[in-house]
Length: 205
Image (cartoon, rainbow, N blue to C red; front, top):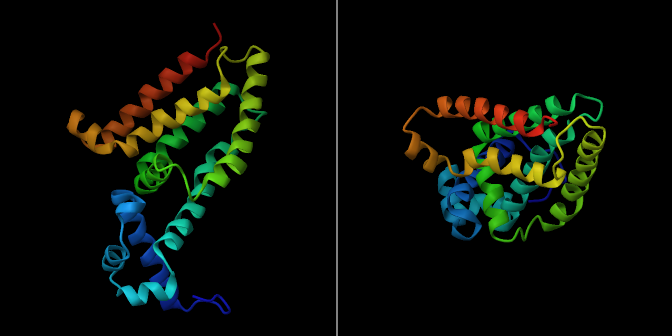
């Protein structure tokens, strides 16, 4: 679809419906398992109508991932070098956990892309994501050098936060199957556990 003039209200609505449907399908089926037919059906549109807005399945996928990368980076961007080190890191962890609670489909979309080798976002991972992680890791290392945090590897600290928080979105079925409790409850319990866990791990000995 050309972008020579602003979209009409119907075009905006249909584009939004397609992206929401694609998010649902991709998060469940992955890129390889998803089909344009299924996305169109989920969006309530015909396949020819969908192709008017996006020329291919990959174009839809790239559109979703491009928007998601900014969403994913925002919490890390807010890590304040001038703040209290433990509060900043715990706050970051809690924001990531909230994202797993509020954006589970987006988390699974991102995870599926990574598992497949990140073919559509590898440039962003090796570019803006790595640059941001290196920048914040240097901030964390500075806090460690000043004696305000326990001695640990800043990069692996960030990786651990991603793992412990995104797990609650990517493995939601497993968690619900084991705990047999309301989702809101296990996210609340996870927040308490992870906050205590990271405060203990980060506090200088």
